[in-house]
Picture 1 (spheres, rainbow, N blue to C red):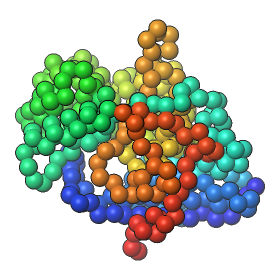
Picture 2 (cartoon, rainbow, N blue to C red; picture 1 turned 90 degrees about the horizontal axis):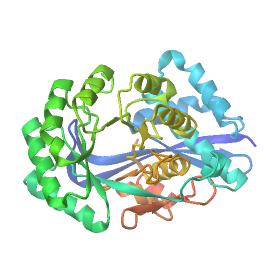
Picture 3 (cartoon, rainbow, N blue to C red; picture 1 turned 180 degrees about the horizontal axis):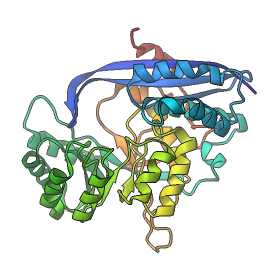
Length: 378
């Protein structure tokens, strides 16, 4: 079997209402999908996290490494592309592009052998996962304390057992939002906060200490990803678990995170950190260091499916305990017209739980009509 074509699909959809996190406003959602075709008629799909037009250009530039290659040789292809481009980027856009390619190759491999990817990774530990709702962004209109609490209560009513609140809008503002959301959802629902590296260590510690009494499940990206010393300072100062890693790449990048004990919870994005090939290695390293692994997920149904296939194989966070804690899936609840439309059968939660697709490869099928409907202009 040989690869005969590599195609990219750049998709875009406007939003009915812009929303913001601490770094930027979103008025539209984009997606960059990778389609790999083989001479046996098997087609695999992947997704790249990151700036869509940039990753599209890089995937197109990587085609010479792929055409004519055996798609089953996922490790060899990953190592070749990484080594050939090592001088130009061990992190960031190049790895995000490679991630989408890698996921598509694993999809081909699973379809070729007619098994889900998790079978090829060693077999499932679980067949379903619990999800937490990512939302609670800022809007241009309205009082945040009103719309954030209303939104959070809505997620609880849908059956989610945990929600994640965006912070990073100023310490006083964040404290008020955290306290309002906690009061609205009650003491038994998990509440995470995510600053998207808006603060330095001094400010992050100040915020963390002010909300420690709110039973925060984790404080995500309190400081910039490059500042591992800052992460360690925040982690040492707070009783709240510290999470991060969506802006880190490959096992080489995570090695420093793990050796430095900078995080309690690591969050690689399968569509960014190196694909399934690399994220399985990162997950094994995390388990070795006793660090919890909960993937960052913020894409379409392809990215969700790839994360689920990997999560099927991950060990529980406390494997020797009588009451073990399994990894949980981030399920973005913000408006994303492309997310479910590109799948013939959307991956939709039921009372905060989501079954892991058991079909061949990623276990999903693509709605090509939706690709045409959302195709971005040149």
